Amino acid sequence: MRLTSTVSTPDALPAPPVPPALVQRLRDQLPFVAAEVEDVVRRQAPEYAQPDDALSGGLRTGVVQALTLFVDHVAEAV
Image (tube, rainbow, N blue to C red):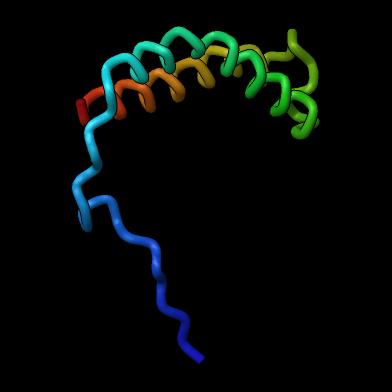
């Protein structure tokens, strides 16, 4: 049996514009969301459990960068 995907690709339909106020709200909440994501990663991935560990040292930076890139991408659709 062959499964077909019902999920559209990013090129299938243009994204509707995102209101600038929503983009700003996302930016304003970024530090709080980053802290929550970091906390979940530290709890669920033992490799990142120690905050002073060399492996986990860049975790916050990586999370903030990823979330910032996401919000920037959303903002481009405005």
